[in-house]
Length: 169
Image (cartoon, rainbow, N blue to C red; front, top):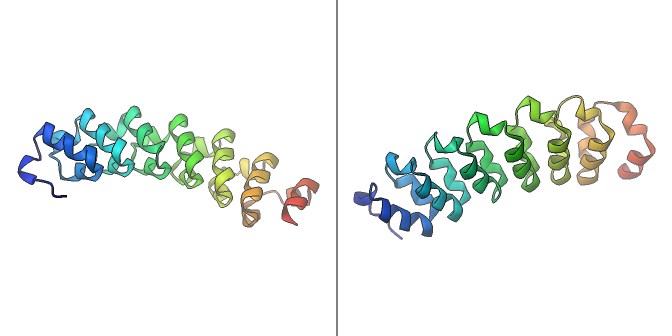
């Protein structure tokens, strides 16, 4: 499928195109990359097209949530402000725990966020706060997902805990 670049500022044309292939947002005019209707249509079709949205719309919670709920790692395209939004990070880490890497220090110390992250990517324990790397509940979830997460446990005494020993056997 070809994108007619002479129509990159034609809203109806671009809207039709991004509904078929969201990544065509990259070829749209800057004005349309800043049009919520166009960007939302693109992100609904292809979550990764968030990358091509204007900075203003990368700070729009509805658009970012639409993307992150489909593909967690697209949170990396969100504004700094939204990367610190607990709801958005929670949606992202539920899909891919790797998103904890993009979280603010505050969210890396949020037990609920970290637990969701380590449930599906145990090794991401590495990016949790020091406090949570010593938390038995968090450590158990991380080790259940990936025993190699033991390398990131900060409290050696936890590794002697009977529940944790059973997981590591």
